[in-house]
Image (cartoon, rainbow, N blue to C red):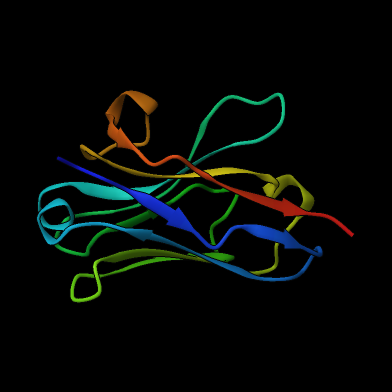
Length: 121
């Protein structure tokens, strides 16, 4: 059974940083594309970043490119999202995901419960 458990969300000022982490099994990491989606207030759920089972390629949404870095550590069983230069528009509930290669919600097969990120002064 695939289980995804997010942590690391919180409140941060604009320009600040947060690091999200998602606990995954070795099997999940090796078989599925892993990544993050988010859903802000009054918005549709949207793709943020994804990483292939082999660790490459890594794809980012244009809105976060250059600010966010996705990585995974198979030994520790984690998928991480380092978020720098945060903006108010990054405020959302962030979901760890496992699925097939793609940026659509329909490409996701498994969802974490989500962790809230709030960017505000």
